[in-house]
Image (cartoon, rainbow, N blue to C red; front, side, top):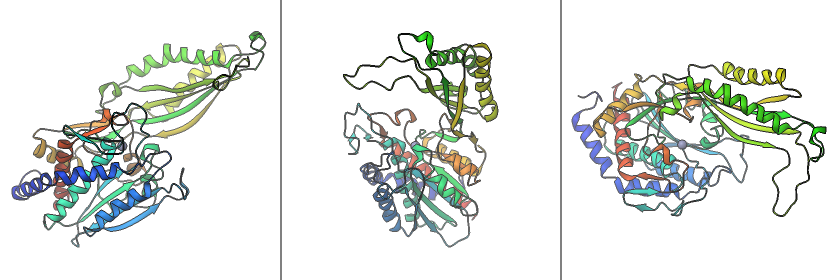
Length: 433
Ligand SMILES: [Zn+2]
């Protein structure tokens, strides 16, 4: 026996079996990439979910298709369709669940290959979603199939879900399912989300998010006599000045104990997502009509640490705006919340993290790094709504190439991560045997 609680013989058999499926794993990833599941608007969700369902039904999985009716973007044209596949062994034991999102972000410019072809070149598989995260989902499916085909008599239940809308917050996907009990004990005990975080890293959580809009108000007047109006853009400039002189230094000085990568994201961060004031953008050939802007709006994206609290994060910005109300003639503002997510961090000594770490040591040959993600992913809904804490993200692919042109995944990483997932699942199931 090893720290994986599996016999050396079974470990060997599972690893060999996954390695022998290399071509199959590449083919499956390519087939998934060929569904252009771009979100928004949520293209091709139904055929992609049904493709995953048909494949798993062949291994005896019972299927449920759940459409998140009424959630943002759901329509007959673009149904938010999720698939949940479940296979019980018949012996009492835990349930290990693999969750992958099937949606991808828009392609953008700069591609040198067809983003939906699944081109293979020099050991890399290219395509939108190759890395984030159809490669990971394919690896989880092949991992589970190899486990089933091994004939090992393991107790418990295996589940795989293909869910939608992760890239737009997960409300039509994991959030909707979590509200309906799909991600809560006793139905599920351990969750692995194969997001692209590198094959030797186990991700246990993520930072928090606060998106908000600040609007500064002014007074419209003729552009030739700005002294008769009050320029909202200049008021916004005063806000930016305060951010530079007061807020940014404070945020940079704060550092979390969470193992966030890259290390720059261990600090509190603030991005200005957009800023707009005055006239709408000019169309080609049009001339502007000169006016003093009476409104300027900024969307900010504040990522916060587990040591901070959301009220404090908001207070800090509000205080700075209130200072300007006192000190700057004519300054007034409104502040509107857009979106918020609390940080989550699961226990690095919990069952799923330990099983994945042991499997990484076995397959990759070194200790994994425990990390947290700078951005959020669906773990937040499993934690907050499903109240299931034993959840990690582990999967192939380099986070940095996600959402980029010529996104790719290394084929060697696909295979290695599938081996890790097979061993981790087998180990979690056999713990109760
Ligand atoms: Zn993703």
